[in-house]
Amino acid sequence: MPAQSLAPTVLLTRPAAQSASFAQSLQARVGGLRVVVSPLMATVFHTLTLPKEPLQGVILTSQTGAEAAGSLRTQLPDLAYCVGDRTAQVAREAGFRVQSAQGDAEALLALILREKPQALIHLRGREARGDLAQRLSAAGVFTQERVVYAQDAQPLSDEAVAVLSGKAPVLVPLFSPRSAEILGTAWQGLATHAPLVVVAISQAVAEAAAFCPTKPVLSARPDAPSMLDAVLAQLHAP
Image 1 (cartoon, rainbow, N blue to C red):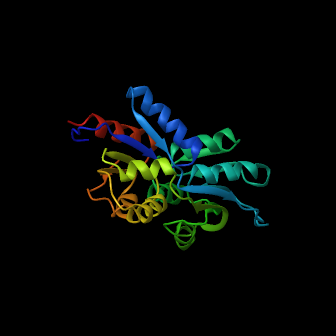
Image 2: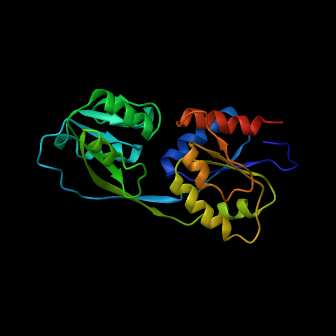
Image 3: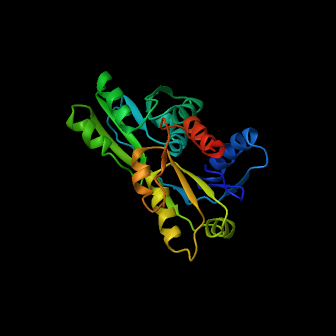
């Protein structure tokens, strides 16, 4: 981040537990860093009926989806195809045998198509991108899907509004297009704006963050460690 007369604030918008973990990693590397946590979404889990047909595996494209799958562990097959390593870790802790695509939805699609299982189920959030089940089924891997959770938009906290309206620079790592869209709506409603830098986990997130006055910084890889590295690089930039 370019030198400023005022120290930057990092604004974290993920759910509280995930933001707390990210904040701890940041503050262990940067002494005296101010971090403000203001979750933009609240998770609401859904009850659902699973298919009666035999399944070979479950597809998990988020940590929250993996948590939902854990609550259904005895009703699901052992194998879980996971979008990334953090999702895979949560699924593994729930008792699944996991395969991680270590990337994004496209990498996950490629992984599954290489193995060609016969019957899968995608447990996803209400808002999802990529039409994964439809694309897999069209390619010969019959895939059903179930919405297992929703993430309802939440307003920014008073503290978050204050830093985004202030004069000190604000650095915001964004992990999903939906969080970028929610933040963009809130940003446009502010009377004044702080200098803002967005770090995006993917190109889709960067595109959803078009409200940012400066071009979003793109993480080298779509995972939390790379996001941490990107945020630290901005904080240490001359």
